[in-house]
Image 1 (tube, rainbow, N blue to C red):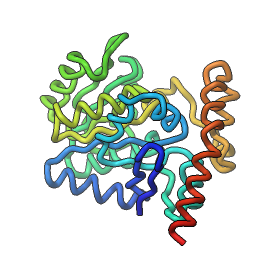
Image 2 (image 1 turned 45 degrees about the vertical axis):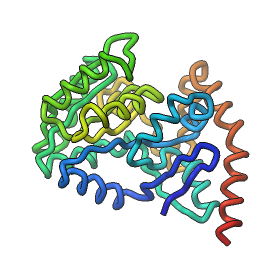
Image 3 (image 1 turned 135 degrees about the vertical axis):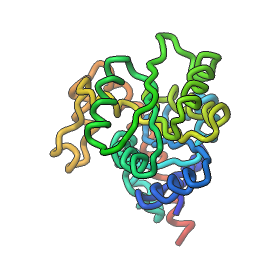
Amino acid sequence: MEFQFDARKIDVNVPNWAVLEARVTERWAQRKGFALATINLDHLVKLGASADFRSAYAAQDFVCADGNPIVWMSHIAGRPVSLIPGSEAILPLAKMAAKQGVGVALIGSTDPVLKAASAYLEREVRDLEVVCCIAPPMGFDPAGDDAKAILERVADSGARLCFVAMGAPRQEVFAALGRKVAPEVGFVSIGAGLDFFAGTQKRAPDWAQRLQVEWLWRMMSDPKRLAGRYLKCAAILPGHMSRAVMLRLRKD
């Protein structure tokens, strides 16, 4: 089942975890790489404003739903998908990698965060080997020569799974380049996922996740940075909801 955002031609083509696990396992067995992005309302706002971001998304092999509004819209459209946030996919994918002897790379964030996150992952996931950790410098161009050099280091390390923690749109642009420079590596864009492991950022508490108001908790935690972002997200939500209704009507 796929759920497409018509305005941006973005397919949510990974409806649930079982499908993601099967597709990643297949790619590793074939020694083929992939790029995985997780779409949310903030990404839809950025997609509307950036042709480069749209090009990067077009290069992603897998797209899953990161955010309850995406899941709600998929159900309204009659094409339901499950919630698979990038940060929550890290440990399951790391466990898969460990079982299959796949080395892991961590790219993005800062050196202290990468060191702490690497230690956490190797402690939590038996037999996991983090073979490469690189924190790009300030002003890093995710599509430039420095990015190509980093991707070559990732490929030379033997990693077959690379978690990219740069935030959108930089991480998706980097992963899109990675599909060309390191075609046997699987790139997973995870935003602040490594910061959660390192303890430099906090996840929304369980009650907020149960009530599906993580966005509200995050905004209250950092209103200066996030209030404007969420207002833009709220502004595009009615239009996308309407398109979901139209998809349902056409299906019926």
